[in-house]
Image 1 (cartoon, rainbow over the protein chains, first blue to last red):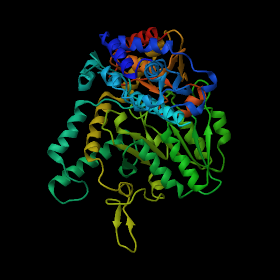
Image 2 (cartoon, chains in turn blue, orange):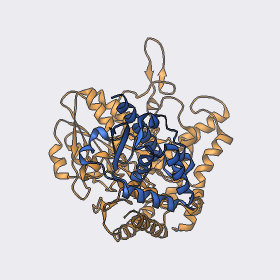
Image 3 (cartoon, rainbow over the protein chains, first blue to last red):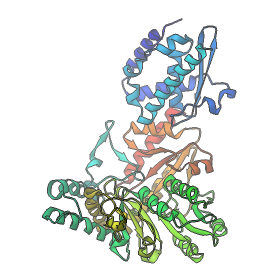
Image 4 (cartoon, each protein chain N blue to C red):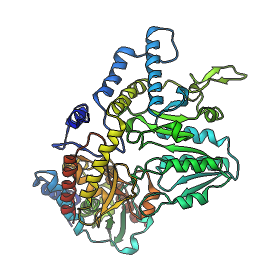
Length: 139
Length: 404
């Protein structure tokens, strides 16, 4: 299992290849399109993340010791963002997720690329992912 | 003479680059940009005229007061109201509506009805919900037809002897619909109801004449008409404003204060507690001067030309749907592109220097009506150009390409 830190380093490397915002956006859009869809039964009000301008559903479950996230959004760029977060945090142990320092976000300039409302949404997504991990870990 | 280059030259921000591209500002429904004359008037006030109004005997206070009252007079002329004291300065349209909703509440009883419409901005919905909740009266809603105009047949059915107030917007901030307010006012008056018009999206686009229109209250904001933020107008008929209790208590709005009994000042000061936005109100005159020098009829004509052009170009985008297609429209176009989320479009075109609005535009009931999460909204002003429309359409097409 690759560590959260290792995955982040890979993402930073990926983004270093891009010269401009357009390429970064195209990459995010591609990630969004490739995101494994969430099961329909999880697209419920309870799984909606508050604070996002577009709708984002997030579901988490524990398999053995690791947490698996699935998600969806009605906006494709939002989906791309959550796809990156899932690639970093999914398939990890709860304790690792909760204590993860997601420094790649600043390193790839993701927040600056987003409008203020979307950046708030990003913060909400991370918070919710960590909360799910914490809750599942205590089960 | 209508000289577009000369108009644009007056707006320093239009020379700005955003994300390395020339700014295309199409979010005028949210707020318009300000001409140099308005910017100068704000800074000149602080440099040359700063003093509190209606207070001191000293020179500066007198100067500031004169200029402050000059704006009131200019506003009165601009909307052809009868008296200067029918012009109340507020923080903005929202504040104006809240002032009336708050005062009107004391005149309502259980069983009374207030009518609003489905296309209202949240600021012309929530104050009335609060008003109804506290007074026990009932809120009724005029529904929309598919083309974004009001169902006037339904409005006729809603009107009754219980109707005490009808609050509708002049122009929809989301759909661009120009509502038949003259007809609404006449019909409402015929059952004895008062009428409040939310004119936030109309005041810089449509020629207003309060005496002809006969609205009881008309509200608008300076910042949507090339003026400063934090300044609004509440026009109200003298005889009705006199029946309403004050909104806020404080300085300026009193005649005499004692612990036994305080008496209130006369109009307009009764509703202007506290130190107002003096710089903004003084500079607001420059904004109105800017409009009247161009003549609002010329502005309306040019904006309509832009609207027709933008509409026909937007309709050429594959899979596009425009929300709000009523015949009588102001220069606001809301649309969506099949399978694309408005936020995605907005985010990408922003990177190309284009400022458009995406989302529900503070009109969630309209989104519910059309069952959509939001729209992309282009709202135009007098300094916009057809070239800018072309740039925007190309950017949207580029976004569409990237997203599909």
